[in-house]
Image 1 (cartoon, rainbow, N blue to C red):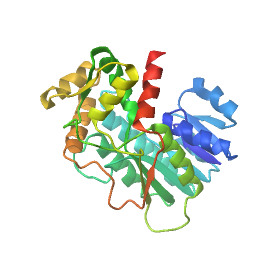
Image 2 (cartoon, rainbow, N blue to C red):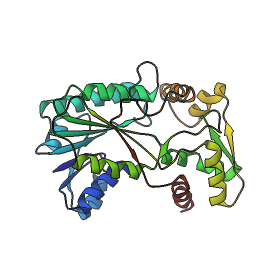
Image 3 (tube, one colour):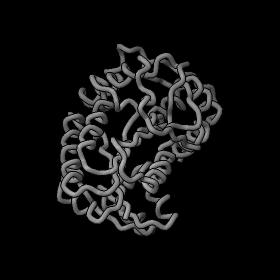
Length: 295
């Protein structure tokens, strides 16, 4: 039995679907019972779990040969770092109490970094806690998800300007289509090595790197209008994020992350044991986002 936490997300759904399509038993772990039916049709066992409930997590992982775990950054939270760390504490304690033979954690590029790295620091802490669990651990670190650009699609399509915290907009950086991460995760779950010293660290990104300038040009081609990339001035970042509805502490996590990103520190860890690549191009990904936006 493969237990997939966050199965209704872009990554988890792709993992669960890939495993089921190849005949493996899957327990889909969801937070929202309203999403159950889709996974029942897929042939999954379904568990409804709050990640702050250690007993529910323990029940969900019972009998698992491998577990895919994530701790999402909470949305609409006044203090997302504190809330996420509380979730990490509960989840890792439950896993440590009954360790599965293999554990794959969804993490981020830059999670190896210490210090003030914003959201990435939370994934660093997540990884460090998981390293204490006696299991065959795989850390799957993904590049920036292209789905994140859906948040600014209305602005770009409506005004012809694609705003960005990436500076300069001509700099290339790694991205990935989230379902591709799930497909890679399924492969890693199936070939989890036995034994070994330390965690297996795998990075995953798309077939090629891209700049914000190129993303804007691609969006323009898909939408049939001119779209240009625009660097949002650093001193406007906090105010921009607050206007978007984020709490002050959440906004600061994002500001800190992009400061580190723009300093060139978010990339593949030199200690990564494997590099994986998705198959979805930026053009294909953005075309899908535009089609969804138009519905």
